[in-house]
Image (tube, rainbow, N blue to C red; front, side, top):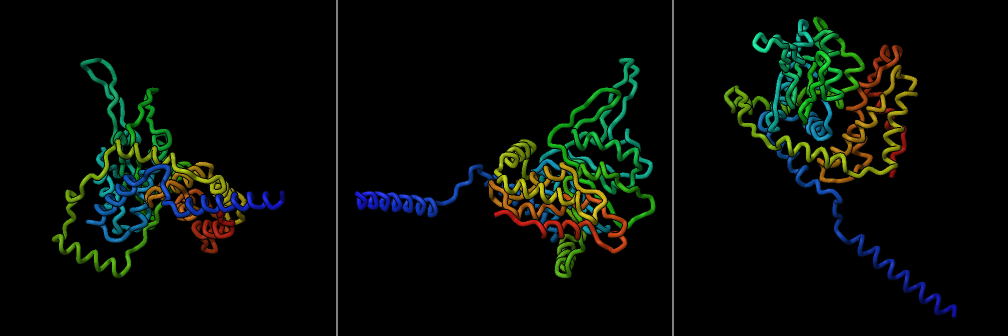
Length: 347
């Protein structure tokens, strides 16, 4: 009797091993097909590369922001293609585009719009400002005073504008790409924390390498010292963006990775070198941006590497150093790096 039981158990083990072997050998099929999204992201990169040399990280983060439905703040010294790249991104998207140059005398009505009296109808009519579009490029955002900065709070977070008691919803997609120069002090205003928290990413753009600068010169010379933006073609429509954003939201993320994100953000609130930690909006931003990066790489699931890639760009502008750390020359990026390195990566 015992011999018979042992044979049955052996047969069951063999069948189980055969099933596991078959599953291991079978090709992996994504639960959500992100092939079209991945191809669209690559086509946008290709179009932008027709004019911009290098800056791969900035381009990838801008595409991820579109997919994650988040705003972007680009910071860097003048002349490193911040505004140019944003304009090229706008041309690859078949949606409305407006550029607003922020200046010290800019008023909220210059951005949002204002009510104008119509003598024919004997009524006030609302005239929309340039913020009523799909992709908004705000150049030198830190040059406008606090009153104008505050006017952006509602539209960036809630995608709506309230004027004279009437609420006007924004058409989707709605994305703000803002630039600022970290060097200028004269005629600039520090962005309030409440506004910084509304940006999904803060992209810090570096100088090009020697090889990239040589390539910039050669390509600009070949174009007869002229950047022809008309050479950039629209790659995706507003309907495509809505479809891709829905696909990103549906991507799988393991519960262990959600806890990993919560640990990273939670540690910013207890770190001795930080005066202000990140908000829950940062946790949601990391999760959504990690999904966007996964989709751009052809995966329908998030990995720890996706989280580690996006976390510094989401956290660096949401945390404040203590005065002691500032005097030591420590940066927020250094603190974020320390936090990520100390937390065990889930497997």
